[in-house]
Image (cartoon, rainbow, N blue to C red; front, side):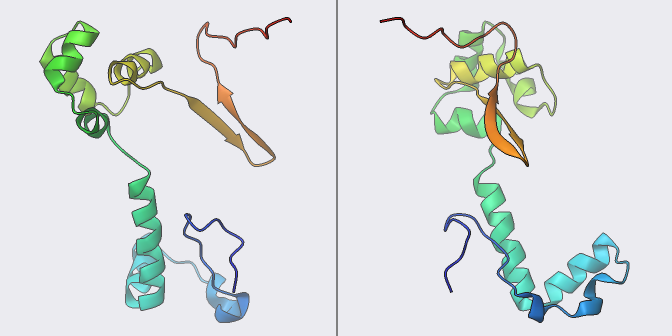
Length: 138
């Protein structure tokens, strides 16, 4: 059966006839849900595939830096800060977008923020005074 989902995205392909009608009627705690999933080999395999996909599409600042073969000392020099500040930055869970943009630029990248809505195409969010260049007039 051909999937309607792109091949690179895991999807639950269970048909409605595979799900008992009362399956959604009971209240279940997250712990009990995961226990049920782990007990069912097919459900466990689906969950593991989704978690693998999520993990493959996520990274940390430290992983970005290492993938670019840069040291904390090099990033510190580029950002005009101490190596210890880079270490703290890599472990933060919350930071200014300007700080994140500076870190990514120091690694040779460019930060883009994409906003998605259920009823519209994704758009790039421009933060700060950055605006799109006007079109060239022939």
